[in-house]
Length: 235
Image (cartoon, rainbow, N blue to C red; front, side, top):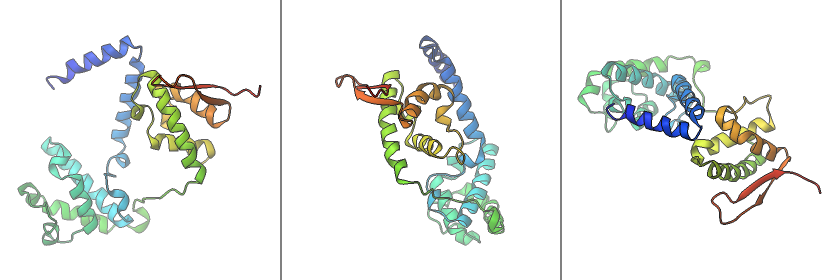
């Protein structure tokens, strides 16, 4: 904490100088929203490989870990790492012997918490099938991949033009969501990347591109942002 507040003041001052204070506020608000949505948090790396019952175990054990970390005022990864969470979910141990047969689960703190962990696993085992979380694999039409690649080029150019990191402006997942929403707005919510400061930068260029109302050409191949987006003209 010693350095965080002075760092915050410096970053806000820099943002104000660039007239981007609202960008910072919008980004912070978005991060807070994501962090307070549980579904966005318990699906740790590796969860896509789990079946529905294993996902239920992961969610229950993750909730135990979250409560434990809050009680100890400690990072959740110190209580139980994500890779160990996945392994517990995959094996769904029923006894202490099963639990501690997992390599890496031998810390004294975990020995003390074995009952809580096994209770979490048992609770997940009892969940009705229709309440289990899912890992739905989306079957996209082929044009989604093609259009996403095109938008990726456009977004990278815009990021360079605005001196913003490309991954902060729009990730590949963000661009996929934009394409899916454009193709089928009835079944897909408006993408977060088209809201707030990102939307101010992306909406006109990317949606105009998808609608065929804007075209791209090379303006200056020697510049970091060599592309130029222009209104489409038949002349």
